[in-house]
Image 1 (cartoon, rainbow, N blue to C red):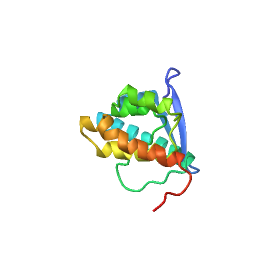
Image 2: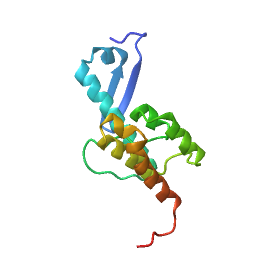
Image 3: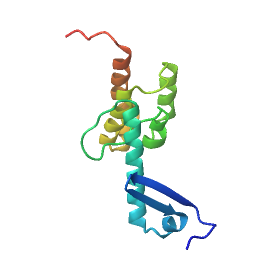
Length: 139
């Protein structure tokens, strides 16, 4: 029996299948199940975001794309002066390739030093420069 105090959410998975989730069910979930659900939700958000920007990826454990350059600080611990320099150079938001390539590069560089200007700057500016240069590079 449903109480009036509980909140319910009806989710249609397909025309034939509907799932009802309520607040009580959410509280009863164990740790691993809850973590798995949150991971699935993040994967769905990433898929929608990638579709919006026509970003195509392959493989497993592909990091989430960047929404903004500010995420470099919160997700990867990049120094604030790097974000300031990006803003000063006129980079307001990442291009589609930068949104996915920068997290891939930074995820591959797992040491604390890699997120400093030494590890980040060369790769970041290669990507930023390529987005500004619309002319083909000479061989």
